Image (cartoon, rainbow, N blue to C red; front, side, top):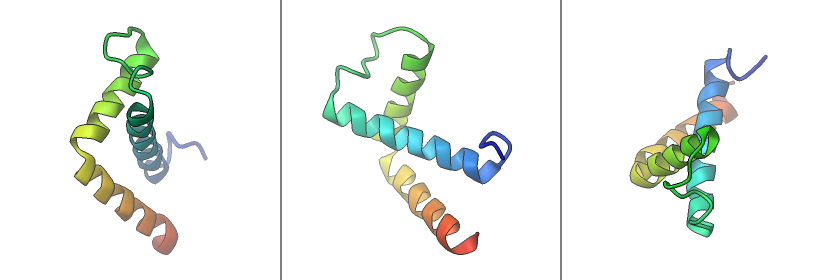
Length: 73
């Protein structure tokens, strides 16, 4: 089943995208610059902003999702 049709998989993919973009931004800030244009770069930059500004909430969601995947499924 695709991640689009399964809500838990979709949330997992979005959390991984946010965490990955924030991590890449911390290593190489020039890769995800807000002045670059284009659809994918804009989405990645927005995911980076969410990961940087809402990091405690994202961390809690990652822990909850990991617990859900490991013990509930």
